[in-house]
Length: 420
Image (cartoon, rainbow, N blue to C red):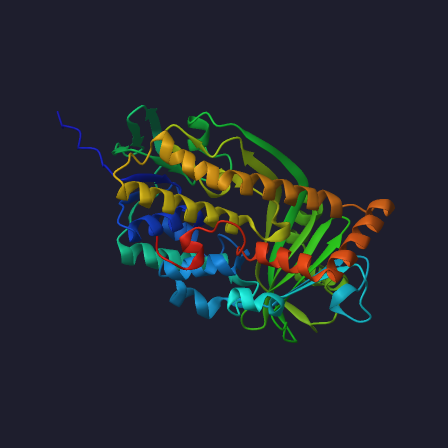
């Protein structure tokens, strides 16, 4: 009879090798800990061009973190500066074309340049480019990754976590981190509930090439069925995030190129000239999911396992990487003090750091969607007046930009571009 092999004993078991899980593994490895990533998907699947058509608005503080973790050289050629954001109520031409409507918001990186050392408001990067940069860094740094394989059995005990994978591999660790996305199996195993609902909307995502240069400006139009965003990419391209009812979104995905372009021109306008579609179209159902707690005994949640939000403000990944930065700092400092990484005292420091920010942002984005995704006359009037007022109050506008760029509040060291 064959004796079972000895279990693997990483410092931290990370379940999920997506954007948040991979970044956490890199951060821990670079600071002297030994993480193990277990992912149900094969790396080649995640890196395929057809896996994820989205682009992400990476806050300037988040980009500092990615550079500090060794991904800057791979990402910078594919990162488009976002120097200005124009937000417009969708029935009017708004800030994108003259004459401007008073119902718009204009955010300009120059207004906060003295606080950000000339950084833009953020960088637009295609998700596949982030995944490729992460894959290179994981390999270069020697991060242990087991994939594709599922965690069949996860036991959370007083003195640690015990897991058994589908292939029979055993794992023992003081802490397991749930980075396995919405509907997290690790979160469920830990007994952490979640508040969740669907918006009955889906986002149609496509990449287009532009006749005229976008000038590093991001546009967001609020229409009755949901926001329509034009996000600048490198090489005179843009990523479109077009929110519609799920039925309409699926019809747009399946329409011919000619029909899709016909619908697109009515929303896009002509201020950037002719547009041509590049690559496939994707549809992503939109929903909210917020975990009732960020930690449980021997368990911590990061990224979409902790909070899945509407993409209206482009902050979902930034929130997840803030979790990663905070958890890294807590765990690295605990290891230096010789503490048990999965102890209640250590995990409570992480939960207290991130709990309020996550709940406040999730609730704020939900309220924003509900305020703007309708066409009721009194609400439209109130929001238009509010937008016009904010646009005239420079200190308030600058505060919004600082928050969106990730430069406000008690920042972890990695978000300042510093090692822990």
